[in-house]
Image 1 (tube, rainbow, N blue to C red):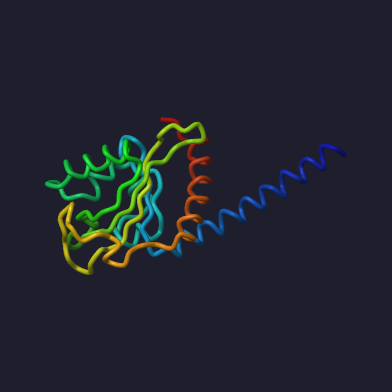
Image 2: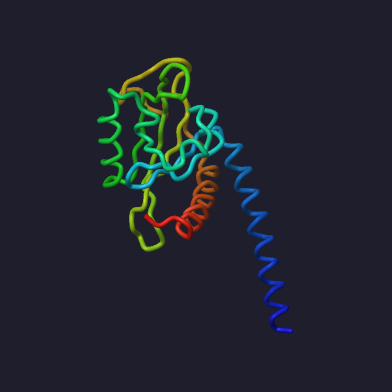
Amino acid sequence: MRYRAGASWVLLMASEMERSFDVERGVLAALREAVFAIDLQHKIIFWSPSAERLYGWGADEVMGRDAVDLLVQEELRPQAREVLKRLQSEETWDGEFTMQPRQGRPFAAAISAQALFDDRGRLVGLVGFAVPARPQTAASPGDDESAQDTGTLWPLLALAVFMSILSTILLLVGRVWHP
């Protein structure tokens, strides 16, 4: 009898987790901001539906690929790698950067990024949120116009929900991916 109760509890928890993941996937799909995460070698480990729409690459096409090589024009890659290096020590970065979609013209993206830590406080990667800063224009990194001036600040509630989702993703990634 005890085993049966345990099995029921496991099935109930599995059902609740599946429902939770469905809600989290729905929240991610509804966000207008592209959300992506990279590991410390800049390999993409998470790619949201909005990232697919913004950059034109499907999640299955980008997973494990170098984010800088994929999304940044060749002449700007050294600057992009410097931003990522600074982000690892400063833990947050907000600004604009010229991004290269799969097809079409480069565009200025307003990006908010932060370092990701595991449950032991170790740096394991970086997460970024991006939206077009200005329709159909390209800007250089370090432009004086801030993301705040372009109206791209996200509601704190969406960020809190995303961080909850991200912690779940990191737990799952940690269980199946070992660097």
